[in-house]
Image 1 (cartoon, rainbow, N blue to C red):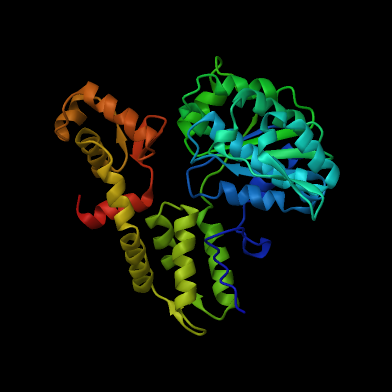
Image 2: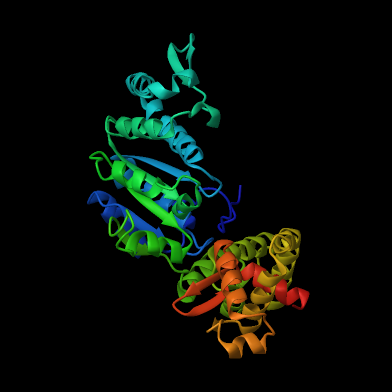
Amino acid sequence: MEINPFIIAGKIPAPYFCDRQDELKRLTRCIQNQENVVLVSPRRVGKTGLINHCFDQLDISEKYITINIDILHTSSLREFILELGVGVYRKIASRSDRLLKLFAATMRSLSASFGYDPIQGTPTFDIKIGDISMPEYTLEEIFNYLEQADRRCIIAIDEFQQIIYYPEKNVEALLRSHIQRLTNANFIYAGSERRIMSEMFYVSNRPFYQSATSIQLDPISLPVYTDFVQHHFHKAKKKIDAETIEIVYKSFCGVTLYVQRIMHDAYAAIGQGEACTLDFAQQLIEQFVSENATRLREQMAYISEQQKELLYAIFHEGKAERITSSAFIKKHRLRSASAVQSAEKRLLEYDLISKRERTYFISDPLLELWMKQQGF
């Protein structure tokens, strides 16, 4: 069976993983040197793929227990504990009867979540959010269990910045106090909101200040990605020229997931001996934007009129600076500097806009393309 080499879902097998050699070496070295890592990248650029790829390397998979959890959807400490607890159970406790029984003995606050399988003769574990009645105590039990694992543990927490939105006010300090005492585990804190992650790890009065080695993940470079695409097209006796790849790449600002999706569709649509033309690639881009139109329209429906006005202003500028200046406000007929500041805060929180140094831009290239398509 022919495999489409432009993987857009699930783990990416090594032969279809594009580049990231430098980042892979750095991340592997950090793990081997018992360092915690803060890994920051825009969404959909491939930080989760890189972590999975790293965890699949023999030097890591044979020597460490690797746990990967995504907390983007969580909204409280209890939900965080649920994700971490289930991840620890699946990747450590299931390794042996001894570790399974040790897990049941250690997690006393969750005793009601354990059952017994008479056929296997082992405990079972079915945890619900409502079972976590003493979150801080349960969290301590999980960390105590990590210390007793039979190998060093590497825990990757995707979208780590989500913890600042929890209603509990001491989550950063609580996690840091436990993590700094561990001797048998290290953490990868992966995040997509650059501003928040920077504040968490590089502002001196925050608990995680300078507690992790920093790795910044940017889009794969165009020349490297072009070679990757042409190699796989050529291998399948298909053609695509560098100009077409460049147009697709620049349309999505190099965002890996989106560029991969277009190449995935192009590869699937053309046969051996055929070429993916620029016109066809642009059709695929338009189709992809249309597929996401409902989701993007709903996303816009949840923001206020004042926030939309600022979003449109930044969209029309492309890259916007000094958004509270009288010149910017007058040019885009905005209400006031204070109104802009309020809207800016919300749009950053919703990840609809991003800020790099003093420049603002639309976070999601797909949203930007849709706005162009709609004639905003």
